[in-house]
Length: 86
Image (cartoon, rainbow, N blue to C red; front, top):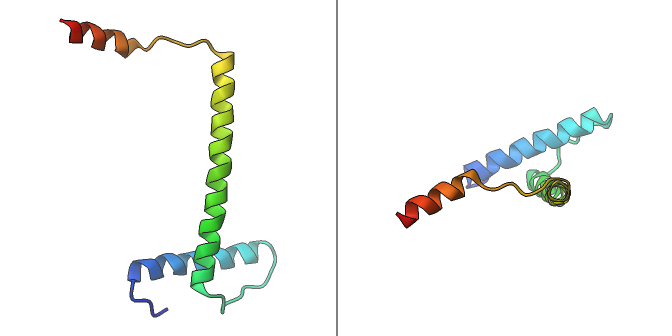
């Protein structure tokens, strides 16, 4: 790769390696001529979707916890209020 931004070139090269390893793991042949920019964008797109699914799962699981568990008083808020009023 002959990119002027060496850090970006390194990230794209690693994305290309992960893409090829995934192809091999699925039983497909490696495609050595695949463009690193394509693999980098493809990987970022997949990570974006995974993050979106995780955020939705996290919000749903925290909502379920709030319903199943009564609210607990914050042990630190009482100390802060009493020291601020003195």
